[in-house]
Length: 211
Image 1 (cartoon, rainbow, N blue to C red):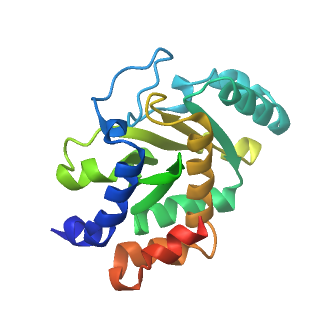
Image 2 (cartoon, rainbow, N blue to C red; image 1 turned 30 degrees about the vertical axis):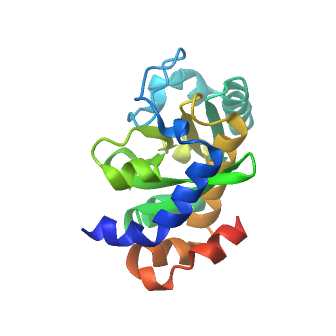
């Protein structure tokens, strides 16, 4: 299949990372988190915050509320983007929906695989080895939701990463969100484009050395 061909050069690296860090990372099935966060589930901004209150606040207050809300929870990371970045994320997510992301831990690394769902404006991450074995059954480890509700009135879009805390640490969730913004919204996008459209141009070792 197309995905099987795309992932074939990555299997050795992903397997090495899993071996270095323990295959138990990918054990188990997704579950509801105490806070109600379930990665991979589409959401509206009004499901997360009191949207009417944010609409009455100015942009700086919105950013403060959003940052504070996400700083307090281990399974979350939040960010704000201006219109140009938001539009680039959405456009490039649709154009090149898949990518791989290293998570370094304890002297090794594992690889996550993400796909963008345009209908929900959401990137969903799973363990690469799980996806390679069974795309339909691979459980979400993390998702990044993009919200444009306040773009016209406040000039900012809101980004929210939701993760399984049993699988990813808060610093890793924040790092994955930072990498998403970097690789979909800078000259580094050429690596994402190559991964999706011209696999032979995707240099995995050079990519891993850059992150």
